Image 1 (cartoon, rainbow, N blue to C red):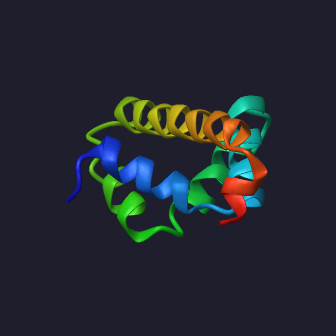
Image 2: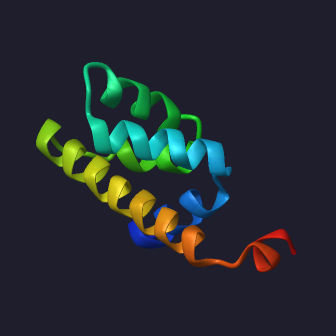
Length: 89
């Protein structure tokens, strides 16, 4: 299995702008059901799902999800700074 940082970097960079926005909203708002919806989105990726399954406890799982949220935030900021011309290439 890939190292978590590499796995998350690869995962968030593969998301469409809409998927990234939706996942980012789930993590930032944390309203009723947002974690469940985020978990459903994350489990669609086989490697991310396998990584999350390695959590030894509920606390560990939430730490892993928080780490994923941080990766989502970094990717959102990165995409905001990429000029449109470069992003379209």
